Amino acid sequence: MAKGASIVRDLTALWFQAPMVIAARTQAMTIAAMTGSATDYVEASRMVTEKMAAAAESVVAAHVALLKEGMSAVAALAGGKLPATGHRRVTAAALRPYAKRVRANARRLSK
Image 1 (spheres, helix red, strand yellow):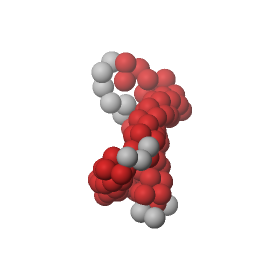
Image 2 (cartoon, rainbow, N blue to C red; image 1 turned 60 degrees about the vertical axis):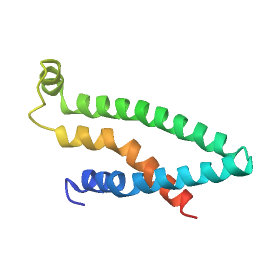
Image 3 (cartoon, rainbow, N blue to C red; image 1 turned 180 degrees about the vertical axis):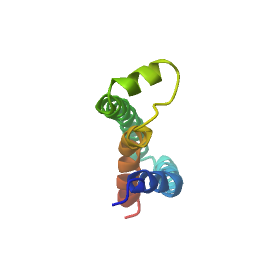
Image 4 (cartoon, rainbow, N blue to C red; image 1 turned 30 degrees about the vertical axis):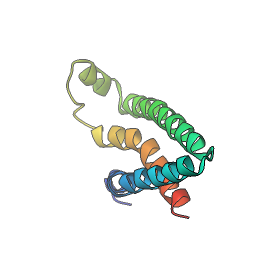
């Protein structure tokens, strides 16, 4: 796979599949609310917990990728600058948890 393919794949998933997931969840929660089902609460709860977990994973993955790049990257970031090298790997690591969940939710909700 090409160097930037991971970033492109993850950004594409977020760009195209995130609105579809939002629409599917909104429709499912609306139908559940009209029928008096408890599924709207379950889906809303799942939505929040997934986002919290993805945010935590993203921060950890970005920090790990940054540390792998070396202390010069950490020093550059601490100085308020983008690291000269490795920013693609850090970006890819930060995006990966969100894109993974969006793809999984798109598959689950499209059934």
